[in-house]
Length: 401
Length: 222
Image (cartoon, rainbow over all chains, first blue to last red; front, side, top):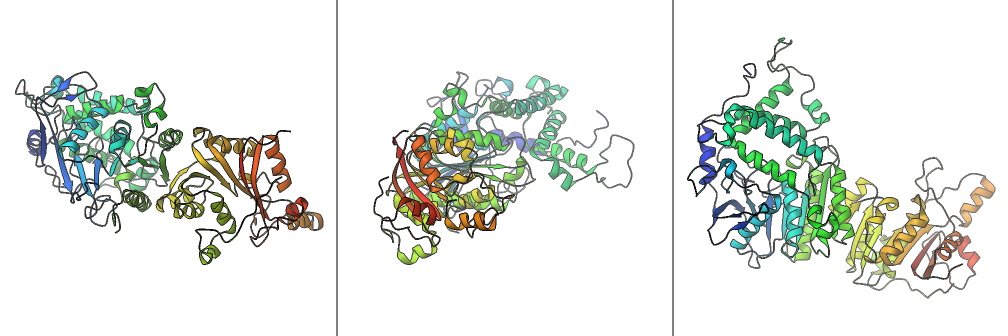
């Protein structure tokens, strides 16, 4: 391990992260013992809290609310500086003035998922029973559990029907689950780079990441907070492996090729000679500063369990029978984590249910991460979909930019 | 074959607007009752779907080319990327009031199966296709001795996507064979004008540049 010097130890930001888990910089909806969250594993979780951010104003008819669902390692900070890293919001390309999700037209909500570590209850939160961090005592959660918690937040905000639920990757899973679970509450769904069930290959990658975390001696059986450690090496390796799956061969070649990092010749060591190595190490070490290792285990597991068809006797179309929700499904040609075939399976099921669905495959070499990057065709399609849905919803000039 | 009278220009479509629209699109749009649910198979850039939606019709589309799909979706149309030959099986029975196959039949691998699927998914089907029995086609083959090429079908034999050309006569025979009822049939000449109805059938097959058919289930068998 001594040769992997480039994965830095977490800075003092680790303390900020731990603080955010229970006392976030965001507004929080607290649910008491009288409002338990019924989890798929059979446990009633109470009390619990959901941290969220909002952008824009809810209109008088309460008809312009859009819920943005974040991906595996995202959070509620869509379009503001991140309280731990100080970096811009994770979806400023999509959300903001003049963007497809414009806060001057829509009331945009994004909550930290159940099981996350940025203020919603999860393994990094304090357990009310013990006064200690939940750790592995936290119950296992699922994507439907996350959505159920979001629905309670939306109730709390006094919103009956969401104009749209929008998300990519794990966020796309939530967006589709929203429509399947609450079809009357979702006017439209924009599901990006996602699937209705996690593939064997994706489960395999997640297992690799979890094993990397758990193999780190600092993980301490999940009780690292109590023991004053954090499995940053294991979590960084998990992030590095996952990050490769978010890109593509072509994108890696375009960005780095075989170029050397600050040197002309190989050092004949295991130092980061190649730019791509240096980049991955940076991705790993910056991730551990803002993310909780146990939270990573729980959220990857939730994705693994996701299979909408399994909840409907194996027939995906049954999940959407008679649904009125308008769908737009988007995939990217170079995404090998959630390839177009997965999107197409969803589209076929929606067609079989006679749902109103648009489906576009965007040509790009940027891989799975394309939904977070500047891909103009993707924005054009998202904007037009929301505009036409807005027209059907009677949102007036909604979406006119 | 019973043919009904039809009038142009069409109700709901302004005459000046119709000049910029394709005549076959206008004719197809006129065959669809307002308020219906329509699936346009091979919807291209979505021009017909837009015309239909402007008339209060709930339209969906399938298009093979990614560019076509993305144009449509960027116009706010409900269009998915798909193949008429393979993807129609995913649609439920009776899912639509009309299923339209506009200038696409000749590009499918299995026109008969596609036609059967259209009338499984939709209560009615509207099919338009270029008539290979058109006199210009015949003349090119007879006199020129080469595969016909026209203004509307400019591709050469080796790069055309159109692999199953037929004549109006052939199409009528296929409809009979698979028990499809022809509710309406219109042949458009080279200028998009309907061939007069009082002319005999062989004239249609000779002077119709394209045929537009409104079909339903339960036609006469052989």
